[in-house]
Amino acid sequence: MPRLQLFDSHCHLDCADFNEDREIILEEIRENLAGVINPGSDGASSRYAMELAHQYPFVWAAVGWHPEEIARCTEEDMTQVETWCTDPKVVAIGEIGLDYYNDENAPHDLQKKYFIWQLQIAKRTGLPVIIHDREAHGDMLAIIQKEAKGVTGVFHCYSGSLETAKEFAKLGWYFGFGGSTTFKNSKKAREVLAWVPEERLLFETDSPYMTPVPFRGKRNKPTFTELVVKNAAELRNTTVDELIKSSTKNVKKLFFRVK
Image (cartoon, one colour):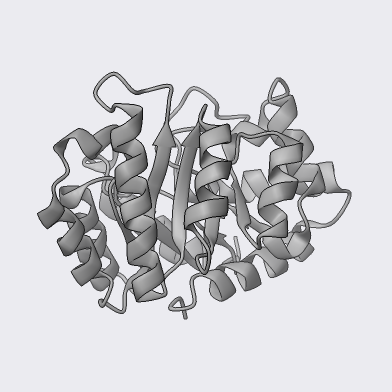
């Protein structure tokens, strides 16, 4: 199989699900993809993402605190995130955002506080952000409109409405789509994927999660990005080659440190 000039714009190679065969997965990426972006979710995973990025030339890291983890976050952690942003293999701050579904240990006000804090770091460093937004679309739109002037980024695994997507698109944001768009019951995500302007489109796996059809139920991996693109080409009535070309261009434009 020839190597595709395709990026998995969001995968978690630091996850324990890859502990037994991480080297094999990384070799598959090297042989089959242009590269991957590995976002952190807290201090430890961000640090490991950076280690992988320095070890493998086709891996890039994002650093930040996921909304589910912010109960453990401190001012010192925010300082560390900003320091890490000077590393040339760190291409974004993420994944950050709001999660009102898994919020047992993450009060909404605390989520908002650290989300806005990390947006401010993005303003100061000039890096884009990778956003996690689950069942918090109203607050997310309000914060982006008020607090994110001068910041750009991608809504990873976009799950909001088409109407909200149009508002984010007006502000110049990008949209990442993964395995959920291959599920026939994901009508909203598929509707947005069919609409999003090609110059704002990214593809991802979110592996080891959200495995696309026909492997749903098994562990996901970055090389399955190709399945996501094939599904998108059918939805958008275009070719796989065209989507690979445009999405790779988008990755390099948004994550400007990616070479």
